[in-house]
Amino acid sequence: MSVPASFEVSRLIDQPRVDRYAVAARDPNPIHRETPEAYEGPFGQPVAHGMIVLGMVSEAMTQAFGPAWAETGTVKVRWRTPGLTPFTATARAELKKDVDGIATYDVTCTDDRGETLLTGTATVRHA
Amino acid sequence: MTHSLHFTDLEKGQAFARLPLTVTNEDVDAYLESTGESSEPWRELVPPIYLDAIAIATLLSTVAIPKGVMHTGQEHESHRAARIGEPLTLEMRVSAMSERRGAIMAAFEAELTDAQDASVSSMKISVMALPDGVTA
Image 1 (cartoon, rainbow over the protein chains, first blue to last red):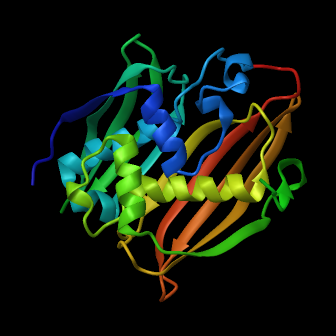
Image 2 (cartoon, each protein chain N blue to C red):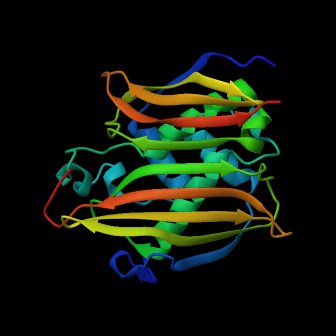
């Protein structure tokens, strides 16, 4: 099986989405919501959960590899810059190597301001 | 929220959570609706990163995390997919705890096992807490 060289997912991350994520993921940290803590905090406004953009990396891997991603996938990322809502995020995967049935991708997530939000590596067994 | 542990009291190697976990269709649907991802691939399987979100929620509900703490990194390794509705067990422990110039770097490992005690997923959450009065 040949694997795709690159693929990506883009989506608007706005405050209502972040608010819904806070409830669904049971993450009550006020820096992610319209709170005094967020506006008085280091970023001066609410920031999106990093896990939302990591979820987009996982979504892209799912679109490319289907259930194999959930069965065999690994991902390791570092967050580089907080996502200041609203922003359009693009999660991108670029093939690094494909050896012995395991594809390794460099993964990134960027925003529409040109900031890199996340970098890392993802692997999946496809054969 | 009442926490049973405080961040600064944690020690490397300390286990701090072991709880039964069953992910429902409603849980998965709410998660996917919030992220915007299609639910089509996830009728039977749990999205792997949702398991990380559950581990983070467990950390946040168990340990009092100081204001200004930043989630700096995340790792996930699937040994197999978690099935919606299956009984699982989540265990968490402190895998690293260090201080440098007043900033605390910590890492928490989470292991998800099934009813046969076989590993389903391994996860690692890395965070950094800046010293009081310092902002990122």
